[in-house]
Length: 138
Image (cartoon, rainbow, N blue to C red):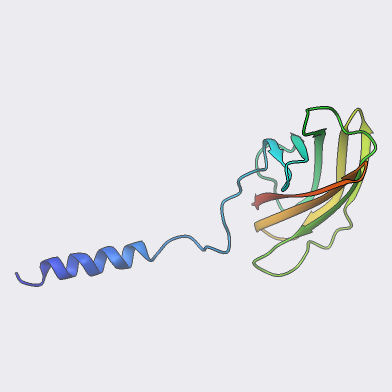
């Protein structure tokens, strides 16, 4: 049949166009050690491990400088957002230092399932940096 190669090509093009929504990339950094955007700080995520569920998130992490020393007394501002929907979660995130460079973030609210980001703006001793943690909320 003359049209078999053409049909196969069209089918291949159709199937390849049916990928995931590019607005919702897979989370890449919710577990383990992650670097801030400019590399001034590293966070070791202690809690949660894995993807959280709809509702309030409690986040705990260790904060270190580029040399690996614990960062004590940092000013950290947290904000949650759902980029594909253009809104936050409705919580009022707060950050508190537990001690020895360990920080808790409370009040992050994931109001629905989907792709969420938690942005942390970090400042210590005149050095500022940002990190965005990504979560696939179920």
